[in-house]
Length: 298
Image (cartoon, rainbow, N blue to C red):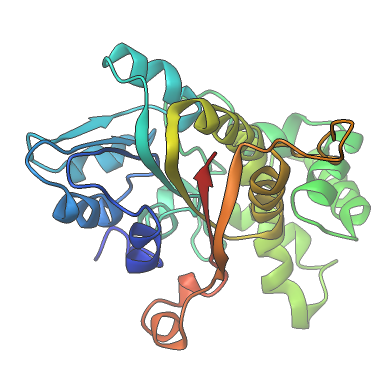
């Protein structure tokens, strides 16, 4: 089994506009597909630093003197670069998608297809699990998670069903969760809705949107002038944050204008939104929702 097939590989790496002896960062190492492609384009004095919080990804470490893999969440990007005597970099690549490996290993609890403990932690050393959310969060907390992170209109119905079921016994596994929700989810849309429920739980467990905000904010400090940011997202919540930040350096609202109506923004958009070709989707169906945005630091 392949650990993970890199999505939009050529397009995302090309978006970095790589300088042979530059310093680059891959903040979502995973199976190492994007990192390997970056290293191919670097000269002897080039350098690549990669981040991944998932301990399983360490097994994919690349043996190359130009390469450093840091087993940390990329929200700690800036402090780890500084501790390795790196102040500025020429480009940063991020692929926010969950890896095929994480989905396909049943015990990680990410997939609706396998029975497993409700886990969903990308960092297996972190404390919060999906089990804790499902069994301990209040009705209002659950409603907010499913509405905000799963974009589910029936968030109240889902939350009420979970509260009702856990009064009888703990909801321990993915199968427990699937079975208790099967009676309230429309059969024709049940798989899609379950995927949205799991997405909401996963985002909460891993604080994904806050991590993305922190990463994007740090990127403007770390990138050199004319440095490139190449970001792949997979659902509207992620893409909206990336799009707004590239446009005006904010996650909400509009950038402030000076007395002349000018706006100072940290990035310039490079090209148009890029999505996978039909050929790539046929080869790797998990690429179907990917969106690539590229920006250059002002």
